[in-house]
Image 1 (spheres, one colour):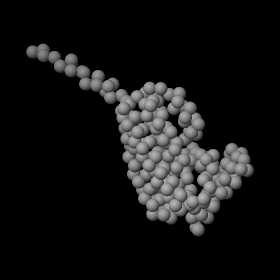
Image 2 (tube, one colour):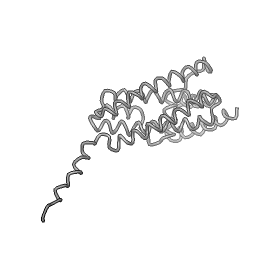
Image 3 (cartoon, helix red, strand yellow):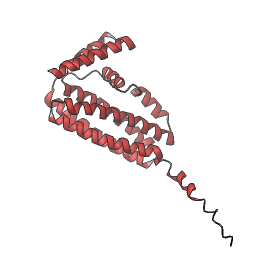
Image 4 (spheres, helix red, strand yellow):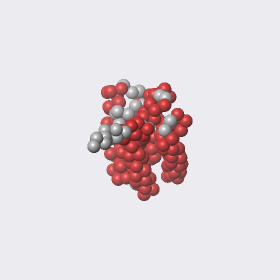
Length: 213
């Protein structure tokens, strides 16, 4: 019950911020109040399902638009892994919280933006990824997905300590390990994975070696 109380305080603070900063509607505030009554694990499940759905949507774009085969392979993995995670999370939701209404998507989106203020909205992300082409798409996809993964890591770190169910703690641990490794992989790809051919010309200054004897 302590956990629900702290959730209520956090949601109340978020609601006040939303009113002062964005002038949200009464309907959205009602959704915020509903979230305060949600068990911590259900809160995590709904947020992570929505978060993974966004990740899958971005990765599906990369499956067709990416030019670097390594980026395409990463996108394939993200789609498969996160779809599996969604099915597992949905199974727990159906088992533990059958009949509980889902969290309001607009409120979840506001919460995720408040956790990572620099993160673009999904609408902006979708528009920019659709407009980008070639290597510029790969770079934008990697940069966006790095931020997106970091959000999942942050949510999972909180769930690892606050979750009531051992299964949720286990999902949180796996998410942290998997997505931290993928962040490192994406940083490597962003840093040079698409430019390997340009690194070779540096090895040519052998002409300075002369035989003046």
